[in-house]
Image 1 (cartoon, rainbow, N blue to C red):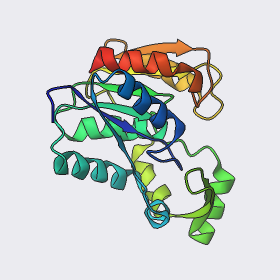
Image 2: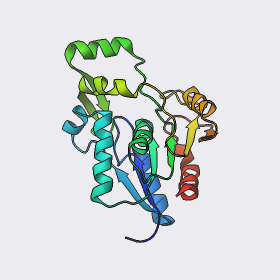
Image 3: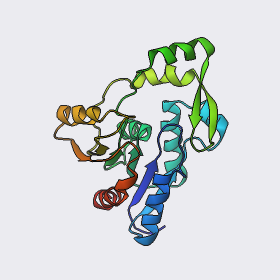
Length: 211
C-alpha cells in the first residue's frame, strides 16, 4: 500500500459499490491516481439486502476498515451512505472528514402508509438497482432506523454536495443542517438531481481537496 490518502465510497439505499457514480470515480482515480480509492458494498448478496439495517451497515464498514487496515480514510457517503458515514465518524476515531453527496442526514419515515403495510407483512418490496429486481426488506430495517431519525451534531468536519433538483432526498435538509451547524458544515449547492451524474468532475475535485 502506498502513502497516498485513503478514500472510501459508500453507496446509497438499494444500490451497490458498482453503481455508475462509483465507476465514474474509479475511472477518475485511474486517470489521476492521487488516492487509494475503495468502493464498499453494503449488500453484496440479495440476502444481505433483505436483512440490512443501518446499524449493520455501520458495523460492516467498521469490520472492512479493520480488515484492510485502512487508516484515516475520507468517507464519501452518497444518499443513505451519507447517514452511515456520519454515524460511523460519531462512533469511531480515525475519520478526519466526511464528504456527503445528496445525503440522507437522518432517516425520514415519510411514507406512513408504506410503513404500516411493511409492519403488517413483516417486510416490504423494494426495487434493488444492482440486482435489477424487487427484493424483500424486512421490518428489522425500519425498527433499527428509528434510532437515526434525528439530526446529529457533526462529529468531524462535513462537506455536502447537493443538487437543488433532488427529488429523492430533499435539498432543504442539507440547508437546514448547515444553518444548524455553520461552523462544522460546508454546503456546496449544484444544479443537479439526486444522481448527480453531471457533477463527477466537481465531486472528484472535492475528494482530492479533502483527502
